[in-house]
Image (cartoon, rainbow over all chains, first blue to last red; front, top):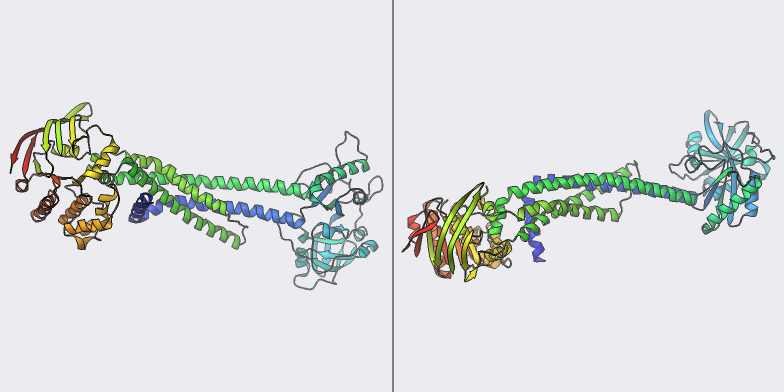
Length: 412
Length: 222
């Protein structure tokens, strides 16, 4: 204990004696560690938000898009151009595939929506009553339409929170009429906001019964006379069975669409689970990249420490000579300078953690980005900074320990 | 206590060699008080460095307390310095950022451990109890040298080597320092070897060794 306490005490004295120089020395480490903490917290925050978004959509959600597989990212944007998926497909899936709790086909279109003097082009989605539970939507106030409304093609609408804000502001929307293409619908409910940054968020859409939609938009039909939908969403009752469900739907749709053994699928199936894992992989890569960039600044900080330590050894040659005359062995001198370097960088690391924590708190509280400071990164950053002290202090300390005591005593 | 046999010391100076000591033979008994005198460049400091185990001879043998130490490793020499030898330098060589007490404690640091009571006692012996918390810059030259003496003596070494201890002091402080050194020598029975240019100081000692051109020129008993 004493063996370590004394070098630590003299490290403290030497740091306290050269306050400005010590501060400048550790500044590089402070910035490096702060950068690591901040960037990693931004990266982790982004991942956490993505996962929360997916969670809010329901991780047991499966989306079937028409057209050949276009992979994730194009699913919502480019889909809908092909016209291979139908309400009848959705009904067949609901009847014939096990482990499915609900199936919700929908048809979406952009329509001009007019309320009083407000006029906006909005995404209008014709859905079945099951759409709400399948997509984890919740009603903020009012109500969603019922099976009865759906059956009779009632002209009622449920608004996403952003649409409500845009068209009605603070006014009460329930019971209000809005014109949508050639029909007039009555607002019966407003959805809870889901936030999120994904395109096509439920916040930006207006939901009406699919049967009502058919009265204003000419819903295309396939050659067989089936009614085309944009997408079919469904939820599985047992997430363990997701793969089985996907396989069953694939074979069912292939036979319904009369595809030969050599034909490609004319639809694609994406499970939320799959998207979640792709996204979290991507964000982990991003986090790592951010961390690596920050680590470079930490490395530069370490080189700064080495530079100052070399200068410090040179400047304290006489002190080293005195200590050697008093009986210090090479190892004693070596440990002293090494402890000093590690002490400096540890202090830098701790200050860096505090600064980085503060910055990431600011970033998230200013609403720029969500951030998550996690303990593992804090521990990693602090131990890496001590490691940097030991690594970059090694050579200067070795230099110091090798000084000839007589020459060292003679130096000014 | 100290026995030098045919000690030579040669320093390489680029392509040439500089012979500083050429066959020094010297015997110093336990408890002696010895002055070494000689002109600059005569090799007296080199001799003191060798006796202090700061350096090793090019050839010859050095017995310190009957132990041949001229061929030991750096680590072993450091151990001997820590345990057996106290140094007093012309330029005091205190650490400027440490208070007097901490400087004295440094004398024990590599000799087995710091003992604050002993450090305070050593300061008391040189008459600086009330200066324990002063830094060297706040002390006069004479006081600084007394702190350095306390540092050298705090670990009770058998051998104390002083290289022109009064060289940077005015005559009053110089006398004070010499009287402290000689009285400590008398009280504690340490072997004290000091280099000096000052014949008055040399005459406080029991024996004066004159060095010239790297050899013992003559000895005189006082």
